[in-house]
Image (tube, rainbow, N blue to C red):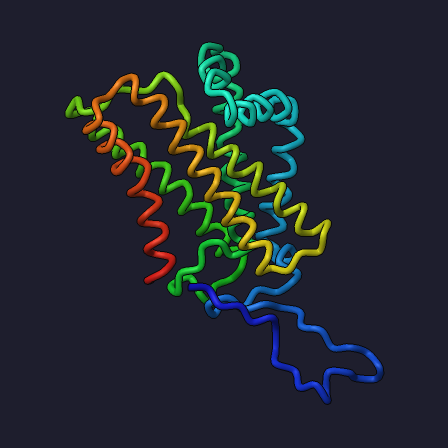
Length: 244
């Protein structure tokens, strides 16, 4: 469980110095000391610059694909239509790298993944590690799917729902981050809001996955698919965050 310490425990009688209120400049979560100027870390600044550059270069594709992904949350046929167009599929797939980068930076800035073994490392390195973990989870999921496909337990789904939701996680995480800055939300509130948004999105993802796969798999195979490819990677992430 995460604990929050909003800076040094400054005594009340020394909180004012020369009529200036001394405010904390950092927060602590599970031993993570995170300066309020996170973006001033050189490596983080480079990563943010790369993300902004990619957003500019891929802006047209973002404006074309993201509305379709959001519409798919309400209407499954939107995702099916997307997969029928090779040009849209290519555009969607080209956004994956940007999505992973944004999701990693948001997770790093707001300390969404904070196991004890990552304490006391440079904030820029921490961002790189988070991005690497996201990539590793994607590769793990692909490897598990390959193993089950090799033994002919599973077949490919006509809708690559996983790609759609990785992009949605990144976009909604970025939106929450911008809103937290605009409304001056506390770190604790922002983290809770991030978890709430991601949890709802994950629930919608599982529902959509069941709707699609129920047309191709038996109940047993569907449960095997969900437990192996969807629940196991997330469970590993949650367990490592809590117990490691």
